[in-house]
Length: 338
Image (tube, rainbow, N blue to C red; front, side, top):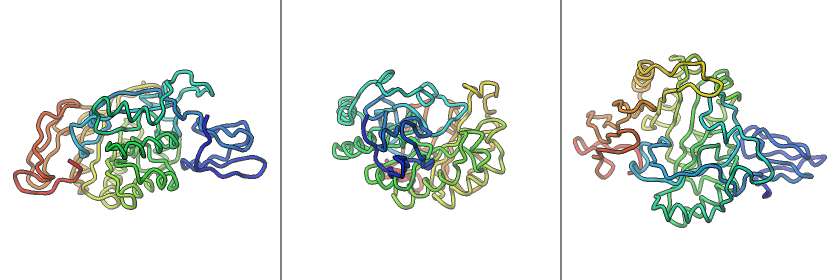
């Protein structure tokens, strides 16, 4: 165990954790909502520091990030636990795991070792993903500092429920913030994540973009009968346009039945195509379809002249035509880091 950062000591040896927006008040011997933070006699400890559950070398397109050094590879690293309880979580084995005080079910790896591994694998960066990286703040912060010293890019794949204080800690060392925005009402958020989190997620996304100047891309996994209301998604697209900017990529991804949502059908492709058009009609310049291999909505086009600039087949970039951040046909500047 390692003593946590960002917590307040309260009366009667209680503590308040300030890493995520639950801001759990924890009595001695108990844990916060994420189950990864333990109050031991008035001191808050993280139970997952140095504990890696999942690791792989992936193209950045898998995050998905389409405007952040396309075609490059990142070491993807995850631990255990989450501050949401999504009923259809694809990584439930680690996010819903019973977290023991021992290291059972994980591999011990220091932040230094993770950075050395990324370099040995010829990765261009490191991403903290698979489970929510904010609750792994002590580890990811140390890793991000080391990564920047060694010339690696850094990415959070996050649900966005981190506190402003947490963002203050990690932002100087974080290049990209790939954030899920699961819906556009608190009731929808309760259904899809078991948490009324919308206002906090929107605030984090706004801060990441406008205060900390991170590269940001948004993802909405469209789940039938839960967060697929087109009027609500129109309001979300308009919020992205107004608060994050029309260049902000929005990934509209296909839901597949899983876990407690196994009774639902996959999202109809026609539904996704309508939502993609809603994004364009709202003024967004880059709206993508996810989890639909081979669909033209996976590709990047110049918003000005319509020229195809990046073609993708699955996670592979098969055509790349951006030159000096510009469309080679009309000279329009394309948002992103290339």
